[in-house]
Length: 445
Image (cartoon, rainbow, N blue to C red; front, side, top):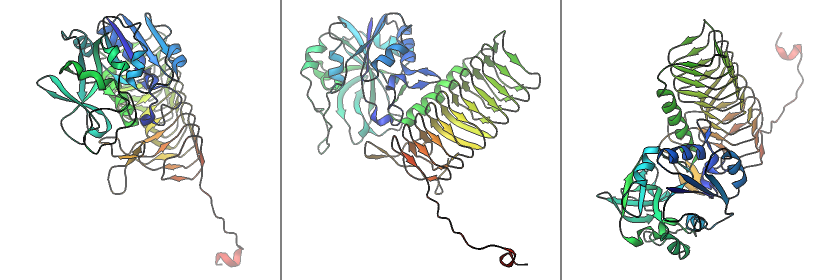
């Protein structure tokens, strides 16, 4: 069995995390989505894999360089998934799988799709609180997809994650319309050639139900990291400590720990549940880590810092004195001291002392986001803050719930951030100073 992974999309709805990488390279529990996909496809019986990538094809190829029988083809900019898949026409002979590059699947999901007896079939999953109007949706009756509709207003719908196809699909893809043909009256479909446009030309398709995650927006990635960390940690059957690692007798460990090469759990560290810790990482001097956390390589968590349950810490991160984390850090992020971060932080980001992310609105309400100009209220993690890659904050910056900061941007000292910050932007508060005489006669003696 062969599989084609469609990874050429722009990832606009994932802003700010698909600006410096494709979505297939987004980290989930410190591993790129592409590696999770390769593992699931292998477990599902796939022998050869072809990634069709766009602007970040060379980076993706480097990421997968050690994977056998995995190729990456640079297809450049395309008009949609139908045109992207056409680039696999000479490679994908006979029956093959087509999988979106921004989904997380299990090996069992892949196996059930691959073993489906029908020539064409689709893997579908629940929308999990997402609006129907944000997706190409499948309507399922008695295990069959009877309609695929673009951005429906409402109804019982499924998200499409992967497909079992054969080479007869390619002539249909070549004639794919530039607008999705099946939309409700009054809807305004964007110009895009969707693979789903041709799928029902052979009649109803078998629908294979699955779980998994579709990584379309930032809160999807945050939740996927949390779920993957929980899965990795709960699967620990016993503690596994590398011979070169060290655990201080004063440390309190309530669960099972996997501790990597050269790592150290030092004085008065508290780990409240299962935890996975990479190589050459130090936890010391009263660091507190809750259950089901994944911590990468070459990190330092020290001096009374606090990491909440289900959090993921990337490689080479520092969490220092009085710093609190609830969420996800990509690699090389510094939370040095006296701060509270709730949300997700891109790589190489440095927070000034006292930076705080608000985690609750005054009215206890949900935060409203704009995704490609459209208003959206997530059903979970709406108050999280999403900071892009290569950012900085000054001391005592306050980031209001639900705000996003674009890549290569800075929030200045003392700023109360109440708006999203575009890419490549410096935003700071302008202070008005008042100068007046002051001496003993003014003080009130």
